[in-house]
Length: 202
Image 1 (tube, helix red, strand yellow):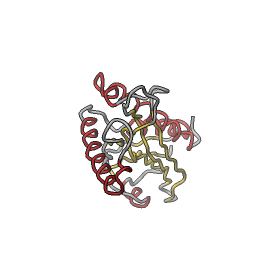
Image 2 (image 1 turned 180 degrees about the horizontal axis):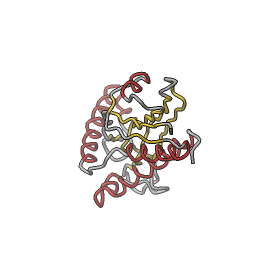
Image 3 (image 1 turned 135 degrees about the vertical axis):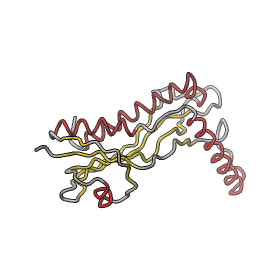
Image 4 (image 1 turned 90 degrees about the vertical axis):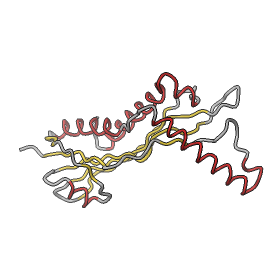
């Protein structure tokens, strides 16, 4: 009888986020001392929350499900595992609780998103435009439920900045957020590849 694999799914996903300056051009907060820096930081937080709401309007989904499917398929094929479907969502943070949430499995593949969205990157530009990269960060742990132990872990932090031509915010959101969607998809694909490598898979 083949060993069984359950892919754990987290109950909640981190929201898509933006990290970048509030205005085009450089940060001038340092010119006005600590008070000025605090004002700039508060303004940036407000603007980045607004950018986050704009990205929600793109109707993008956390790519973690695609990463789970990719790694689970490779692992099952390599070890001749039977993948057991489960619609259970876990709130567990520690290994013992994850195992308790998915009884009956030999192995549990726990893949989670840490952060996803956009952040500022430096780029040569003729004007004062701010450029961004799409990025994805996540973790994986493979749990041997019989031994009640984590047998492999991995993390990834990937960014897509469109080569030597990182996009502005307007370019990311153009054509129904096509470039943002592409950046997140490619970042997630690279992350899945690194997770597979950490598990000794192709």
